[in-house]
Image (tube, rainbow, N blue to C red; front, side):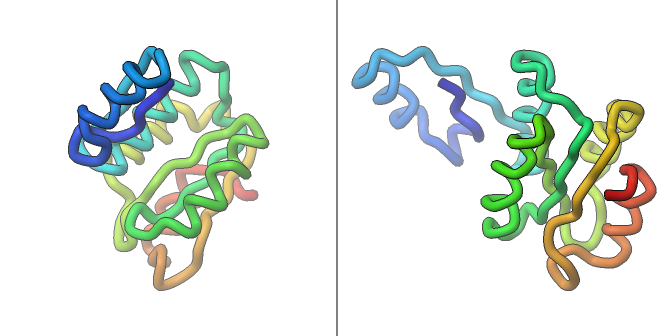
Length: 131
């Protein structure tokens, strides 16, 4: 079982209870923040489960509704969900996109202004292909 997030997001006690109570083997995927954690989950999906970057959805990291709906939609297309800040694209997200942009064939920015600024959307549109 994958535990997404640091021990601040999902406590070690919760992770331990999953192992003990249900006999699960756990693997924690975490970054320095929620944006890094989304990248860690994306990299794990690419490496371990052959998910692709053909479809990439991007949602704000500061609110849950767009990501909650967009995650399963991205997964249904064997794609990834990445998170961004409202005012700018985090540098680690931009670097991840740059590494994988050659395999991307479609993208979707989830949420409009003011959730994701026009500046951030332009940064994403430059890095990702049109939907």
